Image (cartoon, rainbow, N blue to C red; front, side):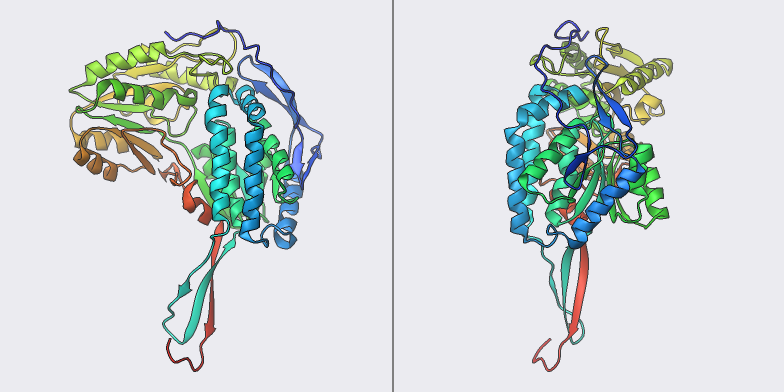
Length: 501
């Protein structure tokens, strides 16, 4: 079975002091109006890291007002795109210069692997900012061929004040995925980080100020979904809300948007993604890919390959290799360079995952490996694999958001497609095969927003990402994300005495 790489003890890594714990509104760190604070917890130990100012409805109102003034009267939407790009590039540079400190914040706040944050999440975040900075001066409409005696063209204009609500599983990635394209478009914004992981968001706000992003353009208000999040989604002066999180909360945001000012909504929601392994696959490589698909980021990723479908000809060999690899996977303190998996984000998520493991046992699935807590301190869970599962089982249909895999067997391509699509979600999927015909047929048959063939978690700044069905709508990343924060305006003027139309 998996074991803690350091025997269950939190690392002695020298954690930097926490510098920013207040709300960031109109370019200043301020206390909440209520004076309330909440604790942010270290999932390695369950102990309090620090207390954070708790933003409420009144604080959101102040932040929105600052963003509205910055949009209606400030320089950000009016400066040339190349100037916005220059400031965003400087912001990216500052992030890279502070990479050690930011990585430590995400490790202690979210249980993310420190070394991976340094080589993955944070460099990628800087690259995302630079990607959209490069697009900031390339926003333009089209000249249209009107049917009558008119000259017509379109303008692409920033949508206005944006509300961002981001999740706790990728605090850095989600922050820049939302903020970067909306900044490049010329929008102003209010962002609520998840209450579990506010530390890096406040640090990024500080660096944005140093880079020269004007006051009021970027406001960061930590708080809870039922108060600060609800205030964003129902606010009459927010023009668009972009949310990543659960399908249940996504429903509430849509209701609030509809009952307030009919603001635009972009939702990236839950998933129950399939990885389909065909008989012609390299079994060892396929097993490695499938395991990574469920244990990466301790399974706390909406595109986790939580349903693995294996063709019957290689199923037995695949299952054996998969279990071997899962047992060798190293669970440990996120500051330990040997660790491959850190703790779940908090006690609530930890207990939710363990409860689903018990549900799987009661439903009659076979527990091949894992299923238990690792160590006696912190929120660590073994990589867990169930076999002999049925399509209607809760562990097959419901998003667990942890290192828990449902392993299934199929006969034909049609069987695989049917099983893969038999869920309310449609976020991602994976295909492992050497056949181009199989890859083409299956990729075009899957109801999912992204399909990875012989790879998984292959994200990129130029690759749009989002869901089908109850996994939401709207896209992050790619130029589609930039255009999400732009509105099309048509301008038409008569043409008199023109020699041609």
